[in-house]
Length: 198
Image (tube, rainbow, N blue to C red):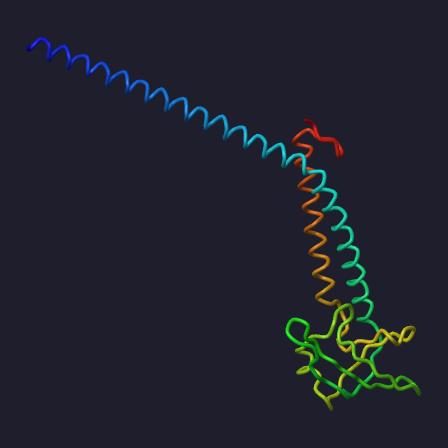
């Protein structure tokens, strides 16, 4: 009786050891499989990123060139207006127009150059008037209008480089930087031109 219980106990211990060994082996196989899948997905992601680099470079170059060109022209125009002649003006109209994000201001300045009388309302070159311009140029106040004798339609109350031109320049620089980064990644990955190695 005692020997039978010992035999059953020993057999039960062996079964438990075998089950434990199978569980450990199955867990190792599962971990290995997960690692293979994860590495495969990571490899596919890297290949996809590399394949998109030529498009990223092209977009960066195109948008960078356009934004930089517009910003450069605006900055140059702003500097040119710093040296323009000016004339004393009187503000005839100053009120906010529009609603919400589309709110701006309508300014009318009257000034005289020689025998001719002009009415102009652009505050800054290269951008729309801002709602706050109403406080800077109230009705009845005086101001100085910078004008171009060759083009009297291009008169401003605040000469100089506009903030919009600087924003265009900064955006262009960001796109060009993105293009340079994509080009560097392409060279590091062995691509040449727009050809993607598979």
